[in-house]
Length: 257
Image 1 (tube, rainbow, N blue to C red):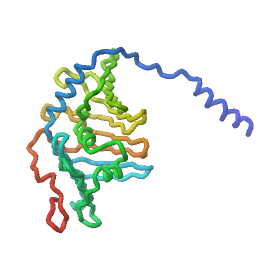
Image 2 (image 1 turned 120 degrees about the horizontal axis):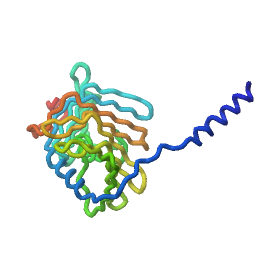
Image 3 (image 1 turned 90 degrees about the vertical axis):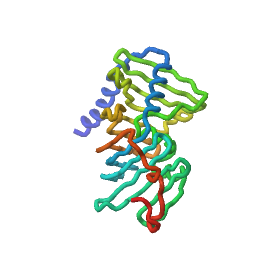
Image 4 (image 1 turned 120 degrees about the vertical axis):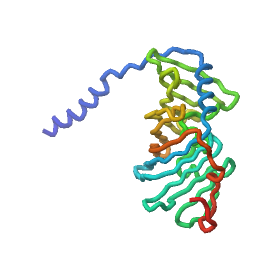
C-alpha cells in the first residue's frame, strides 16, 4: 500500500505537468492613440465621487472587514476615506488635501501627518495617493511624459495597452463595450524594473451619471501579501463636493465626523 501511494504521489503531478496548457488568445499590434485618447476623455469626465462602501482587507492571511466606509473623491486631486463602527463612531479617517496625507485613529483622536510612508504602511509600497484616487474612480492616472505606448488586441475585442516611462510599465487590460460606454477597463498593473508593484481589478461596472463606475474594485500587492476589496453600496458621481470634506482636525477640536 505504501509503495502504491508513493507511486501515485509521483505519477499524478507528472501527468498534470504534461497536460497541454490553455492556448493564449492571439493578439495583433494596433495603434494605441485611439485608446489613449478615450482613457484621457474618461479621466477628464470624472469630477468627483461620494460613496458608501464596504472594505475588506486581507494582509498576511489576516482579514478585517469594514462594513461602513465613506469615500469622497475630488477627481484625482483630493481624497477622504472614513470608516465607521457599528455605533457610528469613527474607526479611522484618512484625508489627502492635495498636499498632505492626514490620518486620525481612534486610540488618540489626534491627527497624524505620516505622508506617503503612512499610506505605504496601510497598502504597501507602490500605490501612492494619486494612484489610489485613480483606482477608486475606475480609471488610470495621466501618463508621465515622455512615455511610449503600445497596444495589442484580440478578435474578441479584448486589448492590452502598455505605457512605459523610464523603468515603469503600466499594463491596462480592456474589453469592448457598447459604443456609448466605450471600452471597459478590466484590470491594471504597475511594474517597476520588472517587479509588480500592484494590480487592480475592476468588476460590476455600472453607468452612474453617464460615467462607467466599477462597483467592485480589488487592489492586490503581492509583495505585501495584501488584498484590498472595495465594494460600493451607494455612489454618486460628479456631484458638488464641499472643501470641508478634506479638512481633518483633532477630535477634541471638533473635527469633521
